[in-house]
Picture 1: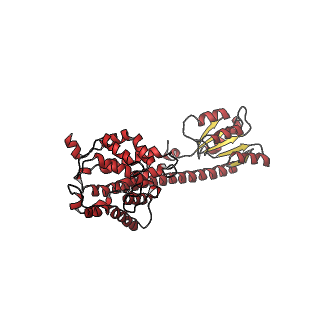
Picture 2: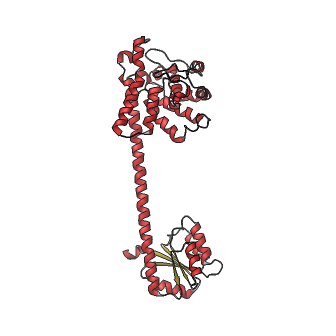
Length: 372
């Protein structure tokens, strides 16, 4: 087989009259690969057989068992076949017949007896259209794939950057190395639990839960600005030292705002990250910091983070305290219901307390591992 024959476009001719099949095949065979079927039934069987699909179909209307109308309807209903262009070859020559054909989806209408020049010209036109359409389809698919690839790359870079920034802050306190991993997983578990709750369902969309998971690691980013003599102090902080420690919320907010300024536009995950970093130490009764917000004045993101952060602080060993057992931590958390924590979020935590314990065990700190 010669190379130019390999690249010939394929035409399927469907007609129940042998003379018509012979005539059309002879007219087209030097230019195209021609397949023939002498009934609509055989044509559909060929089309559905999994062989190479034709680039064009020439279809007679008046055939027994399945008419051309029946055949085209089945082709157009099939998602694999529906885009193959079809030309009617028929003796039905009224305007109404042509109207029906075009409504069914044919691209052209050739009246019998067949005129060779007309047939060749119209077949050529439709095949050129098909080649152009296929090129654009392939090009669009390529571009879509490239966009998806680049988008996934950007998301990956974004996620790595967030985690790297958060990890940088965590390196200031070696005893909480897995804190960011645990807390973001706690936050996601709480969000999923509350996703259908009347108070939270409008906010906790799938997209928002993903944003919360990505943003949560930045909740303590401001600690990078706290002096070591305070951050790593063994023992209770003085009143003045505690006031300095509290500024990590503002420092975190400012760091994220600086990132937003560098980008030049608002990014949803940074907005949520800023809320979490700035307000996760607010308490539901208004006694928290830095603003003393109360109840639903506190963003949902910060309320979720508050539960996750306090639980993890209780069960973790810090420079100023030993770790507390899970059961005792749960009891302490209960005491904060409605005062430190949003009641509904705390109840979700209580429902999930076994899952929280498993999450904690999945991301054990190095110091804890050494004890084990």
